[in-house]
Image (cartoon, rainbow, N blue to C red; front, side):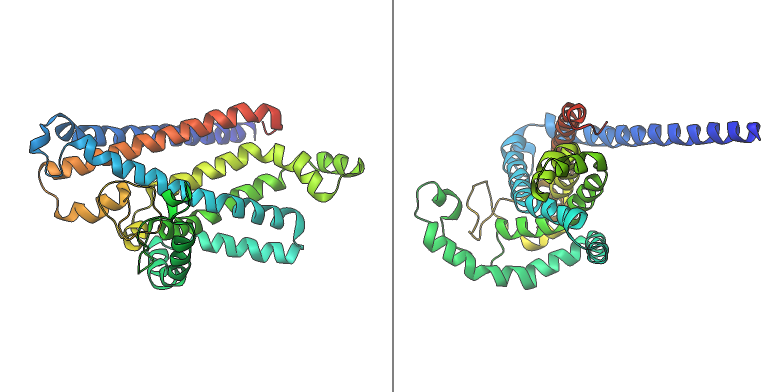
Length: 307
């Protein structure tokens, strides 16, 4: 019996170690592939590149990627955390289970479906609201940076793409946050309530501090999805050249992933290398975001008791 246990422990340890090592090898292989095929574009003369000088070409796409993802997180995070709190601490058990199933099902919807929904349903629905925002705030100082310009007649703007991305990342953030909130020590919650706190005060004092590292991790997972999303952005967005902060115009900053999807089928020669080099930039951005998330989680873990 003891030999069987030792064999099971050794087998599990080997599988776990092999899985962790395999992930590192895959990541190293992807990085090597990107770097190897990016070198020709990074070292060639600007006049030889089909899309122009590399850095002046890729920076607007990088900024567009970050801008769209930031807008999506701005819309998604408050709603996702609120839904997670409702499921974990407010909703009756049957309703909470039903909402949990709906959230999990939403995470399984393909991005192409979200793209079609964005084009055929969301864009026409929000276009009148965009016109109103443009007329109301387009000439207001500071707000005009975001709502100025000529409002799009189709609704296919960077703001619409951000809303679609927000819906896509919502189930990821909600599901992870819900599970983190449910792990809050019961004694912490009961102690807060015993001292006379209301339910919201208990959540603010016990649940949110404990769940902060989990919320950050959930947000970073959602941000990774938003940064790398391709088809939904490519289908919804009406892209233009360059980068600007205006949210409602028909000429919009594009993302790196969507630009690769649109141009790669027709690319050849150094054009392929240039597009892959832009993918390397996206890889670096995602790596930096994840490293920052790990640093935040590590700093908050001791305070929250999550470790």
